Image (tube, rainbow, N blue to C red; front, side, top):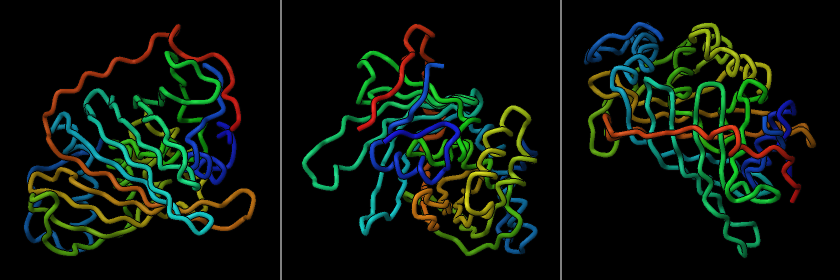
Length: 280
């Protein structure tokens, strides 16, 4: 399979969750402090969510775990990732684990992903890519803005998407990994998130607003007492390019270990693969 940078998001996600192979050449918001206990009205809930990205920038960095699920062909496929993210520098590193082949006979090597403003770098890409080379993808050229193509949603983008929340409600108190949190449920608008994002971050969201079956993204978000996002689950919808059916992808991002050291060094130009990725 090959994910083409200008193709439909449906084809991109199917390829992502199957083999995570991209066909390519080498080429804030104002945030408050602690969230009030009585943030229960719709307006207060939306305001709390709009401050999530800024709260993460104030926190500096964190560790993260991700999962992405899609049901296809009667089989539920899950891709998992783990790593660190620097919210001030907008740089992250994930190790992404692919599921076995449907027959269960082939193990895939973990893929290393580097997340950067406007770009996704991947190593251990498999067919056609030398083991010492990286694949670089311009996220603004992806029809989902890389909200799902990489097999994990960029943690900062996941928080920024909450700035597109048009409606939300406070569900109640909960715990995430033993940390007390406030649970919010609502619907985000990708187009509104694009208009609300800093200029440097708008293009991927604009691409996503055009590429998905709907700009509306239901979510469940969990904020701690400092307003920091601890967990968010987005439910994206896209149109399968071949069957023209709507497919749902659930992306979950978990943040913990705030202040963790992050050392992400982007590949030099000579380390980026200049050819085409072979189909498999």
